[in-house]
Image (cartoon, rainbow, N blue to C red):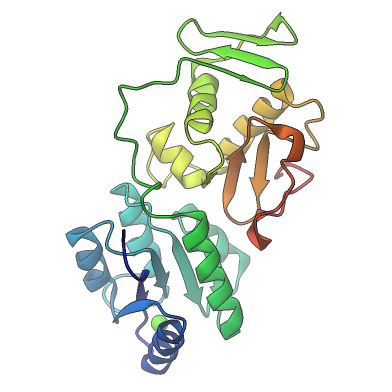
Length: 260
Ligand code: CA
């Protein structure tokens, strides 16, 4: 068992860095504070599972926060990243999420909100389960959920006993969700794990595939019970859709409408 959660704070403004560190430590976390991007990268590369969360500024000496986050994701380091930045434009947020960040909080920020978001992220992305799957040889062969039966070996998909044609990529995506049932999966992770793409590809294409899965498997695609949107975080698959809207926390708000 791991002891206290360890948070890496990357912040070059000393008073903010110190304030964040002090308050996280007061909550019982272990905190490492660094002031530039290259040092942060070096620490995470030395042990990709050393940290439970990274709180990352964007405007940093040496290397931007975007570059730090993107580099980590390209290296398949999936530790949750919360961007904390004075940049408040929606393009900045979008760029942050495209780089693989999980949350974006603008400065000036409310300390309680930062602490709540940090706690949520560590709960949603516990480090042991965000490790890339090592049991790749144990592939899921068949699943049943809702009205559907899927055989991943024969590529046969039945919904209400009617055969449905799905593409290879759609089936790969479905299998990834099934193998990670219940866990919130970011668009970035889907791109990396299912499409094997780096952060360059638009996360929007993931949303198109999600619309397709909902169309095939949901009784009402506008009110999904199995393929849930988790706001600001990604998607979550639940095979038993009967009580899929019981929130496990404020981040688990389910959007009724799929993302545009
Ligand atoms: Ca800065």
